[in-house]
Length: 513
Ligand code: ARG
Image (cartoon, rainbow, N blue to C red; front, side, top):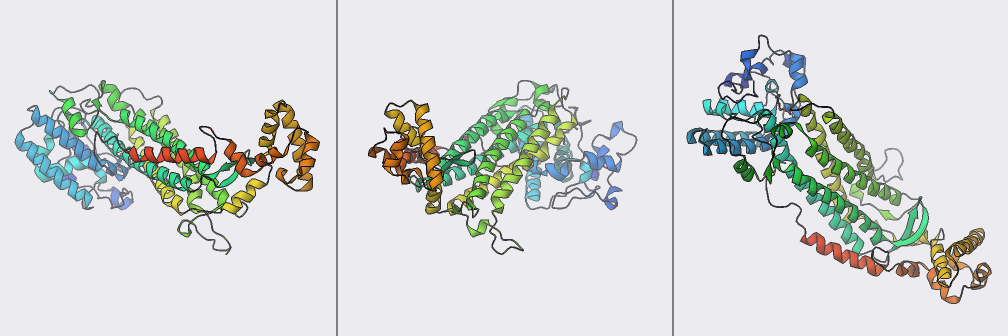
């Protein structure tokens, strides 16, 4: 079986098998049609000794992962190069074999990049495909690569290498979006719009403050991803099938070479758990949930009922029947795609639930959810980072909306409370004033001083500025408040911070895109 460590009995699929199965299209879709099925009998050739009949065609298709795990190919080659190098260092592999393996894997890397690699569904997964091709290209040395290793620690290593690079990519996009939001905020530190609670006008805020709320959410998303990355970045290789290997391997050296921050301490844990994938998907799901909130606001703001903003034409689509439409498809899709990311997280949690130690084939199901999550999150962050600088803000519409709905009622109550009236009584008095204004169809600030005094005699002329929008936002002048001076300070803080921050820790490279 492939899980043993004896190089002779652990031979990869031999050179005959590499050409025998049907190839897979460039799209990576496994050819599952009946025409293809009849010639798929190559699977047992990697471990033929034990079996007396070929794997059933259906089982080949059902168990194969090469249609999707091709995405791990570059990581798989990097892992194999490090493994072979280490085997040579400790004297298990000859220098000559190492040289041949390095050359062969170099050729394979180029074949994969150019789309010429002959992927075989019959060879199950990315690992067996590459190994079989290596043996086809370089002969016996290719069969020695798998010494002291199993696909179980190999796939865990590949996935960690892949995910580490993807986290760095996601962090880069995340920061681009943050920067775009901060720049938009910087020109709107005194653009007033209504702040809502329960979707009803609550208090005036400045638009820059509203935008920076998302910068904060995204920063916590980035933090979660950076923390997850530390746990992703452990080397499982050396765990072999589950118990370790009898070869004198040097795991620390492999870890250093691949940029891992340490090696896994327990081989059974190393090959079986997928918590690092789940952590990534949990952080991604939360980031998507944040983006879905922003998406929803954009959708509301572009609606004619709000009219707060316009999105650039290149981000909107028309309707085939209603000529007046400009639909915010990109935010709507982002909102919709949040569901698939949350779904992937749930799939992965359920995949691991109840699995006994150590490796089980269930774990092959980790790949599609994680790939889809990476794609969806990266694309969505990218879309928003491109969209935000093109947002056209209609200050007047925002302002008009803030003038409706008695957004400064709290300010009047605060004024009365400062004059000694208990806040609850002030709340009551202002409530009556609001009712009166609503009857007259005007805003609080449009009631005469005379009229206002009818509700609370403590009200003097100096109360009137507080009823204006500028006075209201300026008064919230403390850390975290919406006063324009505070928001300007926050913009400066974020500019400095996002300038200083490097998206990836930089300790370890690798771009397994
Ligand atoms: N394709 C497999 C996966 O994704 C690789 C590991 C297979 N190991 C095994 N013993 N069958 O998990």
